[in-house]
Length: 368
Image 1 (cartoon, rainbow, N blue to C red):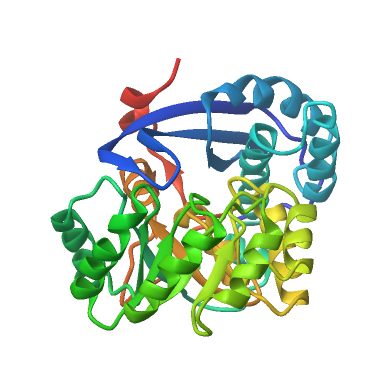
Image 2 (tube, rainbow, N blue to C red):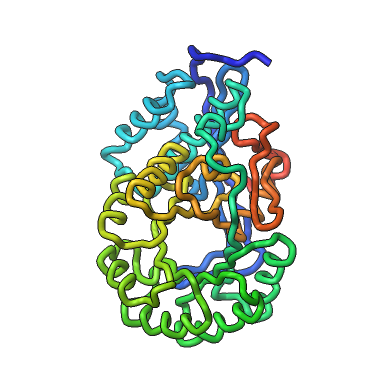
């Protein structure tokens, strides 16, 4: 197959949104939800189509279809750094974070997928492979779940998918959380147990719960307080038991955010999400910042999208195997990874990120 070496103008850009109901009511320590919206971006060039996506609001469609499309179409398909920087500058007066960042993320991921397809290579080959497989941790355990729901979900991840760790939500009812964590511990035996408060607690609440969680061998406390409270996170690192790690970063939209978090010594493990932080380009920036600070990295959500970048990221510890996104990616993407013995691996026989969107299957969820 002919491999392109440059000079490929970008063609049509398409942005589509799909809202998929959850299989059960879900909540964490700060919000509740009953559906998830996926925004898909496809970019044509040189007879190939690049695919990217993000989990965000359908309100970003006009931003992608108008401003970002106009911004990138003066660039060659191989000039991803130039297109990425131009997109960042184009949203200066809108604000780079939040919705604009998620829109840029989807476009950037599509550009990387397109470039790899034009070269007829898997994306990880472009990024530079550091590992062949990526460990996953099962993530769900929503605060709306009954004890039986927790047992069923966690037991499935361990028995069927080989997860070494599982993570559950806490913070809706802190007084009940030690019981819920006890249920989880009994279900998973000696496997690693993580908790995630989504910033719902204050420092005293978090420290008191951590004392209970220490007895239940909780290894990771994610966003015990707001991730905007970098000083609070740093103080909790000093207060928590020595072997319990503080993790945060999933709401990082820019490299500047990750740098501030790392400079503050706020986390033991930095989380980064390519669907929010500027796509593959932004994710690799976060990975390099974590590496420079000698801090471990964990990829947040969207496992199918992260897989190739996760194989290339220095200091990557694991990938979140988030219940909602795993379910959606299995439903709507051909080539979505399947775990084996607690790890996922890219299919190196497929170019790009290895995914193809099932448009016909997704049509019933389309947001018009």
